[in-house]
Amino acid sequence: MKNIKVFCPGSVANISCGFDILGLCLDNIGDEIIVTEKKEPGIELELTGNYKIPNDINKNAASISAIALLNSYKELNYGFKISIEKKIKPGSGIGSSAASSAGSVYAINELLNRPFSKKELINFALEGEFACTKSYHADNIAAVLLGGITLVRSNKELDIIKLNTPLELFVTIIHPQIEIKTSDSRSIVNRKFEISKVIEQSSNLGAFVSALYNEDYDLISRCIHDIIAEPHRSELIPEFRNLKEIAISNGSIGFGISGSGPSMFSLARGPEKAYFIKKELEKHLQIKKINFKSYVSSVNDEGVKII
Ligand code: HSE
Image (cartoon, rainbow, N blue to C red; front, side, top):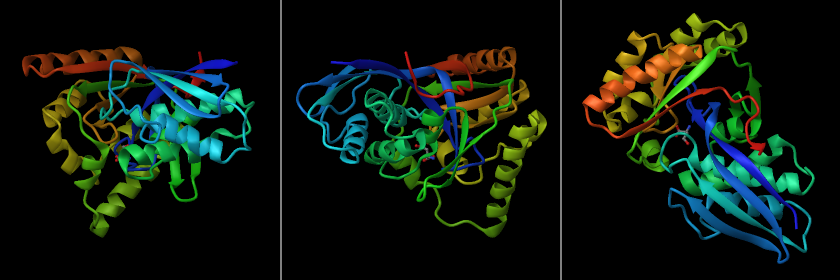
């Protein structure tokens, strides 16, 4: 019976100017999943790691995604055991459910000799994401499966575009150790916007895409504004405004909420700057006695991969 082990990276959704549209794949934060073929048909789960996630195959993002894949494939007379070592805390804002969902379908697809393209796998992984977040948004999953920075033109048609990543772009992640459920965080975002706000968000998103291709760090910095979610979601995150101010005054080219929070991201040009910003943010959190985890990551162009 064959088996395969994959690294399932975390991701930053939205990147401020692309709510439910943009995603960025991280490279040193992620879960590990081993998928092993088993004699009996169907899916079985085994959970290890630091965090509690559902062990019912109909409630776990990885198994729900795997079942969706198998339902679209020819009937098999054997099945798969999915062993998840959960390293990304659920409710972190760095794509915990997307990592599990994308990782399981990627691994099974490899064991089946790739009947589906990576873009097709997004369909299946989206079922696991929906089970956890109560919404079909592919921004995290697209980044994890395709790697790099991705843009979802349509969640309905799953029209996904992989964008250019500027070579020196580095990300600092600050993860206060509180949990925010994506479904709760989505429920506080306004449904209606004035036309002037729509124009502002659209122009920032358009310019951001251009800045990625031209590797124009100054323009990236002018585009990282979130008119849609940050005004509401930042209220749920301790010290958000102060942390943003500290990051920007220390050379961050953009600071915002990672996905639905509570994690925050800062973009920087080069690793030295990213580590310096991390240190400055850590100092403030320590003074405020807030528990956190922090990381620096480059943009992971490969996405989910075999290890
Ligand atoms: N785009 C999503 C949101 C990402 O901000 O709600 C979280 O899964």
